[in-house]
Amino acid sequence: MEDKLRDAAAAADAGYPDNEGLVIDLETGIPSLRPHRSEGQRPSAKRLEEEIKARMPERSLMGILARTAYWVEWWRRFGPASGNEPKLADPFGRYVITTFVKGTNMGPYEAARHIPGVSGHELSYTANRHFSIVLLNEAIADLVNAHAQMDISQAWDDGTAVAADGTHMDTYLDNLLAETSVRYGKPGGIAYHHISDTYIALFTHFIPCGVWEAVYIIEGLLKNTSEVKPTTVHADTQGQSFPVFALAHLLGFDLMPRIRNWKDSTFYRPSKQSEYVHIDALFGEPGRNVIDWDLIESQFRHLMRVAVSVREGAISSSTLLKRLRSGSKKNATYAAFREVGRVIRTVQLLRYLSDAPLRRRVTAATNKVESFNRFSQWVGFGNRGVIADNDPVEQEKAMKFNALLTNAVIFHNALDIAEIVRHLLEEGWTIEPEDLAHISPYLTEHINRFGE
Image (tube, rainbow, N blue to C red; front, side, top):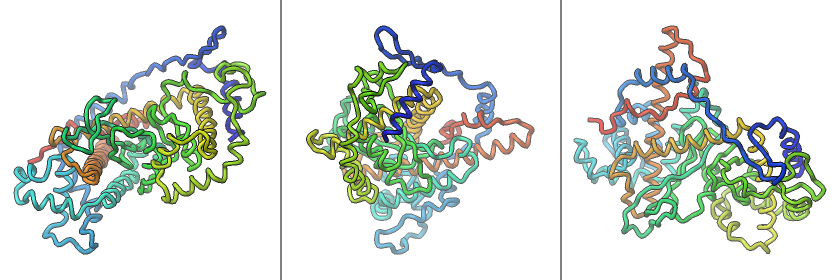
């Protein structure tokens, strides 16, 4: 870790003369970062996007679910808790309809008014007895794995990065389990998503408004059961915490959040003697803000024990990070976690300020989460987006159902896009990989949400 910090600081100092983004005032020592001006979408990419949108076949959500269930067979994950075969006349059809109803947030009895041949009781019973959080996670992973096998997903990225962020979900005012969000000014909870760089959702949580969102950054990575195993995680500004940086590093993840208030962050020196020609002002007064390597070394065995316990599931990462956030500064293990976090955050800050393409990748990754949030809310159109359940388990299942349905649409859109691209190539189009990378599978114009 000491070598990592020294190398990062030396590289940032040596690259400062060629760094067009970072400017440190020679008189005041105050740094500033010039904003990157987007070059905009290339004309060829815009033309390709318009052509793909014009050729997307009309689909219904029910049809998308039925086809993806038939191809990927995610519906086979579900069944009674006893493990016996479902005693349903048509389990395939019942599970598809139930996923549609719960994923769109319609509610079983409201949906039964519009779907012939099924009752509200049947839909409610199936959702309660045949679907669980564990089984929903497995079905979501099936779609993630199928999506990763497609060539078109590799055009978007390689699956090694994930972005984590939350969006507010409304609940009823008389829901005793809901909390009023200070950020949004209304009651509800937070749907916290981990979105792959290939656009699909790897994991989804439903968490209270009052919790510190950053504690769930690691949790989603560890609970991801798909074959897509990202090593880099991007997050919003809540990810800038010493304990989160430390735990991510100990578990082998490269945490790189979007850094907005970096001017207020403290940069730490590898030693009191460390001084730099160009960027010394970032570290404050000479000889101050120095990492305590002796503390880290003396506590490193304890830190690794904690990390292994989290990895093996003996303690959840969210529980650990909550304790570390409120931990006593007199506790040596807490102090060591904080010190490791200082090292890793300083390294990441230096990388962020020195590497303009990295800043653009972080921004693009967090933008994908925001786009996914809008897309999943478009899919969950029922009941004006309000979560009607008061039971925390049912609230979590509601988020999982919505993620399963949303992932099915993303997977099906990707297949349709790939088919259109094949036809365009046969017609003599020249399609550059850079243009194809700009085509998002979050397309809605061709989808009839309500069906027939």
